[in-house]
Image 1 (cartoon, rainbow, N blue to C red):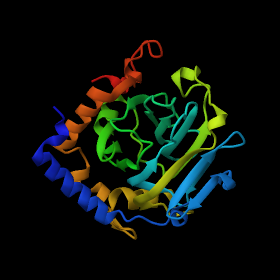
Image 2: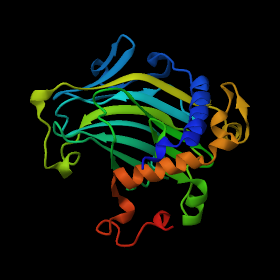
Image 3: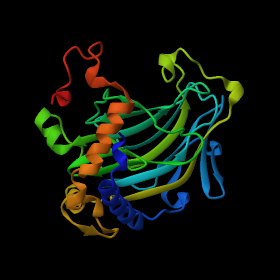
Image 4: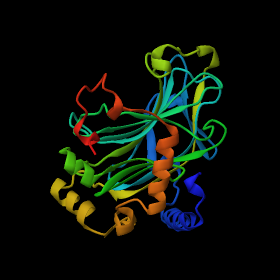
Length: 297
């Protein structure tokens, strides 16, 4: 049974989504982001923003501001047709060797084969926390929403508002790892050639006869506590972590109901992972003979 069909759960989710939608206003791309490399491969096409990959270059964009806590959502249509060897990424990251990072990486595939979405978490510069899922729809035929919710209590990866992965502050503390809450993060996207690993472990290479490969954004929403450049770090940490309201308005992403998943969201998470999880670093003794501490229940 598909747990997403529960009427009460849908009511709770509808309220949550509608409130989020009212508060999360879409902005013009150039108000939020700028090309980070290969400017000529970052294309404004009416209301759309496209990232292009060909055999000369990939491309990417970066947010103009950094944020401490919030929610970011991209409505994205992935590369159509034979996308083997390509990776399209949408992620948040801080800077430096001890950076934090929350990754969506969409791994291309041969025509007719399913896309895989890989999520990863870097905490204080340490990653290797990959999980991969297939998707319950074709992400190349229409736009779908990919979101990262980040507040002092949890990091949640969502696909069309269905949670697919959660790191809770409580679970992090129990396992002895730090919870990422002390560094402002930018919002990024990029497309590049990764045919040494992206498709079937690198066995399938990029077919450049299908280039250019194009990932298309319909909208980008960023709600967060915007970090003031040059401000005192301790003051900004207090402002974004402790306060309930700032120049951006009310910090709804920190409200009590956002600190944990709803019952319906918990059911969605269980459903998504039971039916679509294809790889979990926690279950890979070849890479980790001793299970990473955060994987222990």
